[in-house]
Image (cartoon, rainbow, N blue to C red; front, side, top):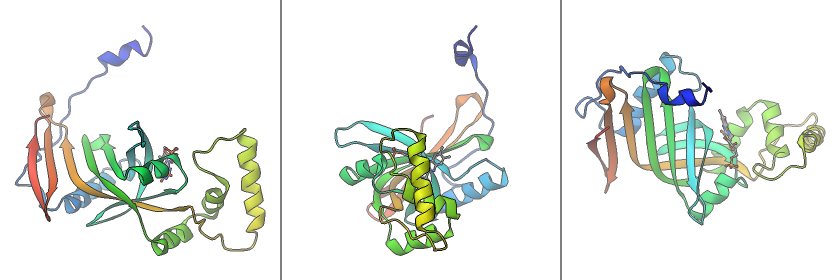
Length: 215
Ligand SMILES: Cc1cc2nc3c(=O)[nH]c(=O)nc-3n(C[C@H](O)[C@H](O)[C@H](O)COP(=O)(O)O)c2cc1C
């Protein structure tokens, strides 16, 4: 049998502990912090990796992984190239969704809302903290643009390495933070017999309302 045929029989039961309306924090961003800490403790690899979904002006969805680099009561920040496909889609339609999947804990978190650029100072600070080769790569890569071949990318990298030789690498203007401001956040806990817990927070006026969804 081909390995792909076997996909329909891959199956396991989920065994997480109960997640209850009364047990969760009334603020979903605080609940996120509690779960994030548990993911770090459980040694989930890349707990800060999230799938980001955007929609083109024509309504076509696309998704990719990005790394969460900041969280506060307002939302989730990540960094990217402002000329990339995701960033152009977001400038035409700021609505987006992110998903975290933490397999070791049988947990998923989904957030939906709108995305806006973060301020330049925060991006400067984060850019300055990155390893130098990553800083140079941000100059070399016109993210989502077409390349004639890998050589072209490596040549651009070498060019910028010599341009900034013995100098600090400044942040390119077209590289910086984007922040998702959620209007809804759902915490999913896998439970036995497919009777999973789904706790949904929805922003209504200026408060979070907590609901339970069927699994
Ligand atoms: C684990 C992982 C982490 C990534 N982190 C980022 C990130 O923080 N920012 C980013 O722009 N791309 C990141 N990428 C690359 C994106 O998935 C994607 O290839 C790139 O941003 C171009 O996407 P776009 O053409 O849809 O704009 C990451 C990919 C993986 C697999």
